[in-house]
Structures are given as structure tokens and as C-alpha cells.
Length: 403
Ligand SMILES: [Fe+2]
Image 1 (cartoon, rainbow, N blue to C red):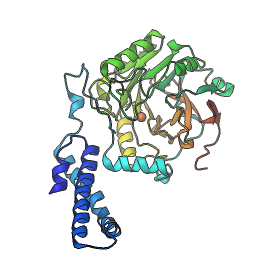
Image 2 (tube, rainbow, N blue to C red):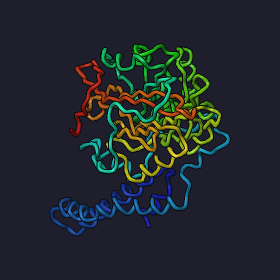
Image 3 (spheres, rainbow, N blue to C red):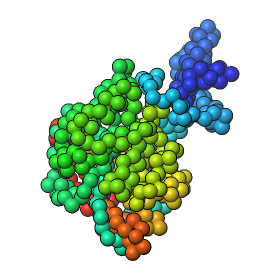
Image 4 (cartoon, protein in one colour):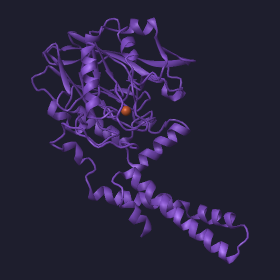
């Protein structure tokens, strides 16, 4: 009863979970200590600690059962359909986009090691592949997540610049915003403009498409999101990922749509994955979905994620994914490109498992039936080598983590 009561107070699932086990546990243990004290029990704390350990599984698991039951009753994502989305939303100091189960898994993978599960279910295609015979018209490059430099200097290798030297446009996920929220937001990602200056070592800003459709795009709140978009456009970048500007049509041919499955904050002003079909352009020669999805620090997609991805790619020309902070398989489905996650391009974080990504480029053009398809695909693993405050970015043939 007590757990159910405290479970019912907060609105967020993570808050429900922790409040419903921490408060009743504290009350119960306090009562037990009091009773043992009155009884004159020797070694009170050892006795209470031992019985506490015995009841730990109950305190950890029962709130999960309550969450499962609640999930079937409520639509947690209803806020995303709010027609009154064009406004500042109430922000949370502590928030996560995940269910409690996935949150705990994420913590575990951060503390111990990224997950290598489901390796057998998906395979990388060769680093240089030809998916279809086409007449190449346009070439795009893609980087992994751009995370804040955190005061570090980003040094980009000449080999990686050479790899991207023949692309027409570069597409990247900018994880976070340029301006911070009025309140403290735990784990928020805040960029400085330095990362944007370095990015232009690949291509001029007007040839770079930045997506803000990610779980940290709302870390600063609506006003600061709009300020970020304005500043990026002022610097010359093309920006996508907002609810009313989710997509961009390049050369009047290729429609790139950015969308996120995850959001740390509850709001309605970014482009969400479940709405991505609205931005599909039937008049475009090719539609590409740039999706922020998957699960953090999981190297291979889960079976249900594979099903989800295959469902989406049945409608789209190709999908390039990101968010997991780890490289995931670059695959092909019926001649279409499906890259589950490009990992991280750059981050000032010191943990080695955040330093790996994928640099990818693809060419598009018409085949013999004048149907636009993906032709050549080239991809390489990328790696950050952090030396003091310098982040050395380079490409490599192999992925060092599990090889
Ligand atoms: Fe993310």
C-alpha cells in the first residue's frame, strides 16, 4: 500500500520508481531500528541491514511491476501531440527518456561495459559497397554524434578530411544546444561555438546540415532552442529537426527528414519519430530519414529495434541512425541503406567507450528506370584519442572495442 501511494505521487516514471522504493524502505527500516532498540536487541544495525538485504529484491522489483501496469493504462507520449506546442514547457531538473528498465540498463553499461548482445542478428556490410547501379548525382557524408567538447580542443586528421573530400553535403546530429536553461538540468548538453568552427574544416557551413532532433535538443527550453537554431543559421549552417522545420530538400531532389524517438524533456517542438511520415515528400526523388533512436551503449540492435527499423525502411529510401554513442551495424535492406547508429564523432567526455563512431558517405542518383537509389557506400570507423585537453579525431579500419 505504502509503495503504491508513493508511486502515485510523481508524474515521471523514473521519479515514481525511486520515490516508491526509497521512501517506504526508509520508513520501514527506521521503524525496525526503533523496535529493535526498544527490545534491546544487540547489534541492531547488523540485524536490520541483514533483513534489509533480504527484502531488497522486493523494493527493486515491485515498482517495476507497477510501472508495467501503468504503461498499459497511460499514453506517456501524449504531450508530443499537443497542438499548443509552440511555447515554453515546464522543464525537469532530473529526467531521462527511458523506461526504468532501460535507464537501469544504461547505467549498467556506463559503469561496466557496453552491451555486445544480439551480435548474431545483424552484420556490417563491407566498408566499400555498391548497393545499386546508378548515375551518381549527389554525395552525402555523415558523422557520428557531435557532443560538447567540454573545453577540449578538437583536432581533425587530414585522412578524415580526405575521406570526405568528394562529398557535396555533410549531415550531423548536434546533440544539445548552445544556450542553457534558466533552471539546473542534470546531464544537459551545452555546446560552445568552437565545435562549429572546427566542423567547417570538412566543408563550408552552407554545405553542412545539422539536426537538433535528439533527446538533448530541448535541454535549454523552447526559447533557447529557437536561439540556437537562429545562431546556427546566422553562422550559415542548414538546420533541421524542429516540428515545423523537420526536413530540407537538397538540390530539389533529396528530402532529408530528421526525427527523434527520445526526448529528455516533455515538449512538443522537436520532430518526433512517430510523426516522421508527415515529412515524407512524395515529390522528392529520394527520401532519407535521419533518425535519433536505439539504446545507449548497445553495440547491436535488439530484435524489436530491428523490427522497428525494418518497418520504417519499408517506407523510406534509406535511414541513417544515431544516439547510442556506439557504432552499430551499417546494413542493407532490399538495396536500401540502413545504418543503425554512427556512434560518437567527438566528445570531451573521458570514458573510452564514448570515443568511437562511424564516418559514412553515400552517393545517390537515378538507376536505369530513372528511380533514385543509393549507389556507392563507403564507411570507416572513427576514433577519438584524448591526450590531456586535445581530442584527436581519426578514421580506422577496425573497431577497437570488441575486436
Ligand atoms: Fe541522444
